[in-house]
Image 1 (cartoon, rainbow, N blue to C red):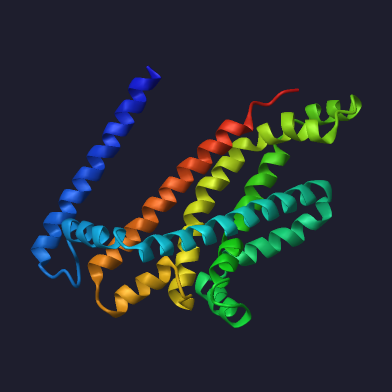
Image 2 (cartoon, rainbow, N blue to C red; image 1 turned 180 degrees about the horizontal axis):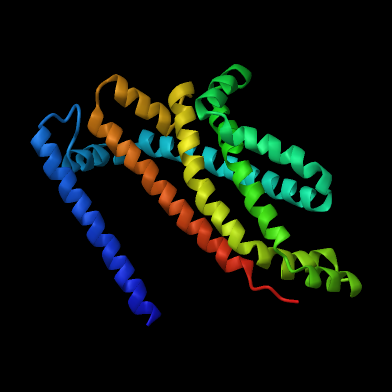
Length: 253
């Protein structure tokens, strides 16, 4: 029954994608100006032209490394802050204020400030960390606060080692919240990193390539690069999300 439902969901998703692509192709042909609105086939052709060059894959690799770096640092920092707030509740208000300011501040403002403070190659990583850390912090803290207090008290009574408590209780209970954080933060992380690359224009990066495509009015190439970012974001979200769900385990007393 479950497999049938999954097949139906996949089929609906495929049908939706096909319909969107057909509408894209038809509307682009009606416009008839690729410099403003390239068709699906023109975008695919542009992507094929990029895919056969080593510089394209180098560009993709560098941007992916920036996203992975910012994501890894943010996961560590966000979880550390959440654990700190759970152990020392008095600092929760201060940390929430900082993360609230980070969430409310426009990304462009952070990018411009980071361009003053850091080398252009580090700006995307810094901006990604600022965008992702609040999401990880809030979701992890919610997960920790939802751990059954009776289980926590029992672990203290029986002197369960901290490592065992984290592995068997804390991590499994916070798993759904971490999965949600991964799903939200990866998409935002890719957008933040690429946006920073567009503005700060490092020597290599997808964002810098998008800016160059815009300058030279290579709109099909711009569409191809944008779709590359979307696909990479989707792929990373699925891979890391599945990893978190697989490794989380189930809560045990």
